[in-house]
Structure formats: structure tokens, C-alpha cells
Length: 120
Image (cartoon, rainbow, N blue to C red; front, side):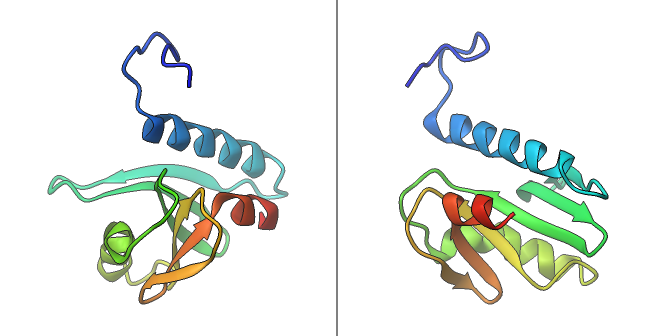
């Protein structure tokens, strides 16, 4: 991997993967008839969700993990966001470069990037 992306010599593979997914989401959203908004979410207490995709049907929280496998712990921030925002959709995603769709927590799904981007 090229570690000299945008002048940053110590960028991690996780940060590069998250940046790639962000670029793909930005391209996708520009093709929509009503363009959704894309946000990053972080509270003062430190809860983070990598992306919030906000459109006509509500908000979809998306966490990004660069590992080949995801676990229940990877869906914790998405589950917490959904619990704290009852008006948010009842489904959240953890996108990763794996092979299978798996339920990580109640209504939080691990979804391979190829599956998500093919479905969008």
C-alpha cells in the first residue's frame, strides 16, 4: 500500500479503507434523484459513527471496519446511536471487506463492501 497519501506518511490501512468507502458513497449519492446528505458523527463523550447517510427515508448509520471479519463489538457504536436516536432507522451497517452478511447485534448487520456497493 502506498503510505504517502495526501502527504500523510503514517496513514493506516483502516484509514485508507474508510477514505475509499467515503469516496464511493460520495459518488453514489450524486447519482440519486434526491441527493442524500453524508455526515460523520461524534459526541462529546466520544461515541463515533463513521458515516450517517441521511435521506428521504431517514438516517442510516454506517461503521467501517477494514478487517476481513467483523464481531459484535464492531457494531457497538451503531447500536448505541440507534438507541439514542429513536427516530433513526431501525437498521445499521458495519461495512467490511469480507464475504458474508452477518447480524452482529440486534438490527446491526455486517455487510461486505462489494455487497453494499452493488446494492446501492
